[in-house]
Image 1 (cartoon, helix red, strand yellow):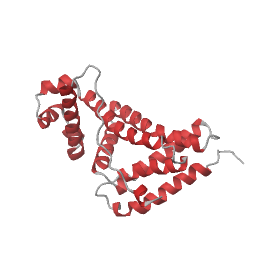
Image 2 (cartoon, helix red, strand yellow):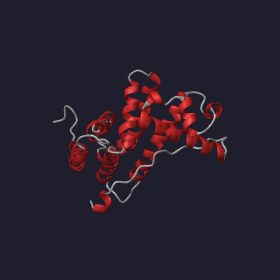
Image 3 (cartoon, rainbow, N blue to C red):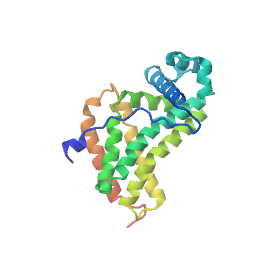
Image 4 (cartoon, helix red, strand yellow):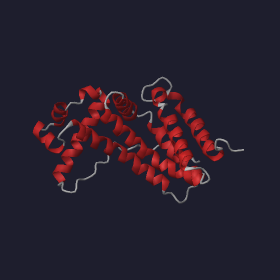
Length: 222
């Protein structure tokens, strides 16, 4: 892979879907609200992200906020959807590269995630919500939905590489690769102690994932 191919791409923060019955000003307001909520989550955590705090920091009246998002759950649902949509767009671009082999696309997929882990957004946003999901069923369900969407393109690549495997085996490989990468956030994330070693860890991890999928043998196989 060339140095240009190895360069990390900066991930967009949000892709806010337009509402069917929306209007330009309303869509702009919703995006401002979501960006404000995301900023509060990253900088101060979930406890600081009250509806009134979001309205104040966004510079709008509380009633205007609740016109767009009646509850904090509604706000969180669309915020998570906007965040994962930004990743899905990048994943889709990788998956539909006809000039790349499945192994190369697996490399690109993993590289995109590992390049993103040292970012401040990723280090603070996702662990904050995972911690909350231990006590909040709503956030728990939304986070699992989010990661299932993120793993779908990975599962497709694995299926191309290993059509001989069962769907359960392909899903399990995708899950293993996903949590192996996400687990590195605690060690190699923003301002974490081994962030300076992420380049070597990334090479080891990606090579291991490609080899795993290529050479995996079903349990019980001779």
